[in-house]
Image 1 (cartoon, helix red, strand yellow):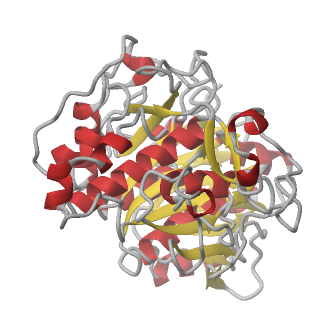
Image 2: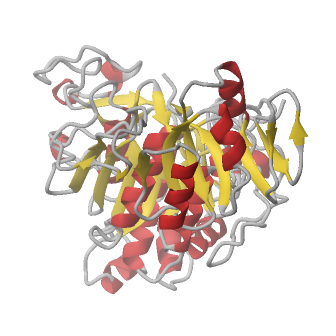
Length: 484
């Protein structure tokens, strides 16, 4: 059964009583299920408009009895609670694009630096000369990291240094009730530890931009000079639609405050469970970021070679989809990494601004290391004790691969959750090397410079990411051969 259905003009669906005289409004089937199960109950929804809602739109909502909720600052989205009668009326109104449920999306974890070309990049004299004599590090490039938060007390991820902001939303998971009209979202900023459970966000943030301070530089992220904007949008249970769209809105609001050029997303679902829809509020938000010159990166997923395994948020033509590979030799795709359903019948680029009619590309764009990754360990309960000195949870390979002195600060994990922040870090390097790059140019360079792999495109995309040649190409330098 399709997860979504579109209600067309004058359609009447007898089982739900929903009809519309509108052209076409996308309605999440979960919303339909919820309002039919409890027609009088207040069902939390995400209402997306064609344009940012105006005073007349809020007047319209009031006229339907939808008298309160939260509005976003940059995105055309309102968070509210509605009943079935209100839904019936809402979908007939002009300017309404979609009505979605507040779903929960899973984290895409599973439990280097050398193969991705970072070490070669650091030693490249031509690159360093063009970069004022210094290695490219992603210096001052902002990376919005939407996840479970960051432990910004970690030596590698210091609040006020490489973590320039760490935020959560007081309104993220609170049911929207109408006590006082429509109010703005409420971010809580400068939080020392926003990753309060399993450490997923801290680990991934370390992969992107950890400084390696606690290991003498041994476990350094892809872009240690980048600036992280940690945005908590969920927990170990998953990330909710409410929190995700607030996080993406915060990214847009603060784009110039923090020079945000990249947005990392290591969560999602499967295409089989949740078909791609251009009107989905998350897809609307990622397109807005793309059109504002922010490169959006999504994990391809961890559901292997099963039908519809790929993450639907990663296949939007304005998003970069990242699969996971092994680290040995030139790498092989990880068995868990989600395969696509074709070898590239859609498009890798969507134009600037993005053309919404561009077909999604139902396969990954690129592959990065996603197995036996070492990165920052959070102090959060379940990862270390509150003192942060004795590991309570230890990754499968920690004791055999991490020096004992570093165990309080680092752990191992795997998944496209962590191949994705590698690529985000590499894009930050590219943006430092050439600040004029657009998102479409970034994905084109990544694909053109990738190391080919003897697998179908639906499995590995263009191949293994090559940071060295990606940065050289961004600088208009010729590519160099790497030894096998």
